[in-house]
Image (cartoon, rainbow, N blue to C red):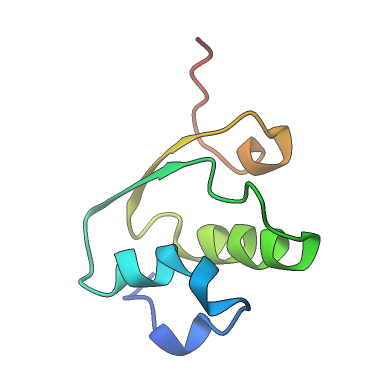
Length: 79
């Protein structure tokens, strides 16, 4: 997978777009803490769809209690 295009981040509300801001500088690691908490179902799905798209082109470390968020992870570490 190549670089992520900013056009892919058109979800609302724009204030709930920290992932797009974090990806702007093409980091090698993305650290997420409960990335879909307090979002409606549509925005949750859009964020998860985006994470699935960038999987493999960037390392994603994510903390979550939501099993739906973890289903596409390569490795899950339970604490």
